[in-house]
Image (cartoon, rainbow, N blue to C red; front, side, top):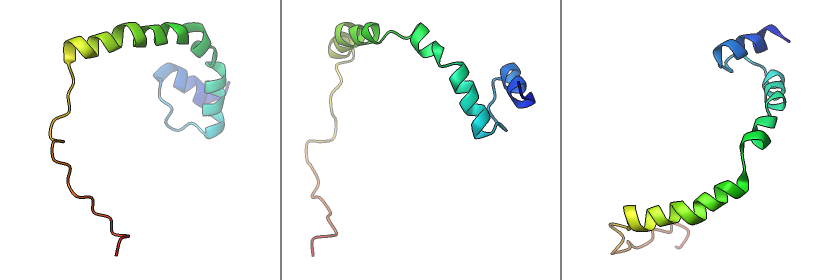
Length: 77
């Protein structure tokens, strides 16, 4: 393992690493995406929880768009 990669593992910093060293780190840790991320679970949260929370708790609404300003299109001469 190159010295820079050892330093990264100790500090968590990618400063000073070459593109090749960063690519090695990404390849070494690619398993984290599949080991700890479940897309079906995330989509279930989105569909069943986040929409409900947004619609009934935050009740987001647009403010300040009642009067749409005239569009400035400099290509129209």
